[in-house]
Image (cartoon, rainbow, N blue to C red):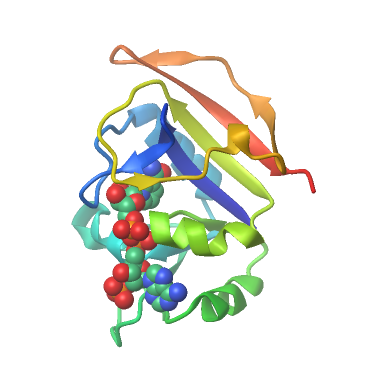
Length: 160
Ligand SMILES: NC(=O)c1ccc[n+]([C@@H]2O[C@H](COP(=O)([O-])OP(=O)(O)OC[C@H]3O[C@@H](n4cnc5c(N)ncnc54)[C@H](OP(=O)(O)O)[C@@H]3O)[C@@H](O)[C@H]2O)c1
């Protein structure tokens, strides 16, 4: 299973339920990578999407402990249920947030990480893959710039 995440230089990923710094280029990259795939998303992160609605063009698997229905999404109530729901799709990406990345981490073998060369305040973090012995940065794109912020697209793979 794969994941996609945007990380700041301290591997922070968000604060107060949202991403303090978002790049247009990263939004486009996210759309391109996840298009047509299934995505596993936590209920809190879903709330931060435009209009709090599931993403179009993707099969949204929303994880929540609540007994709720979400139009345009498949609601599941545990990681096991999410994995079973994902298994029928040729491709599934975990798209956050922090608690969901953490719980699905053992199932990941590929992570698309956008590195943003900036450190806003974060209260949610992703594991530092550059310090993880069982992960390797297989591909790193060139550093680019948007509104004075440097960023690059990296692909990490589990090596053991
Ligand atoms: N930088 C990035 O690429 C990126 C991407 C996504 C999110 N984020 C950031 O991540 C932060 C949000 O992360 P978060 O950890 O607070 O929230 P989250 O992981 O998005 O959602 C947490 C919610 O998911 C549900 N949940 C989690 N594990 C579950 C399980 N095992 N079984 C059933 N339901 C489960 C619960 O929903 P209920 O409360 O409804 O039961 C829980 O409250 C935000 O700051 C956001 O901006 C960053």
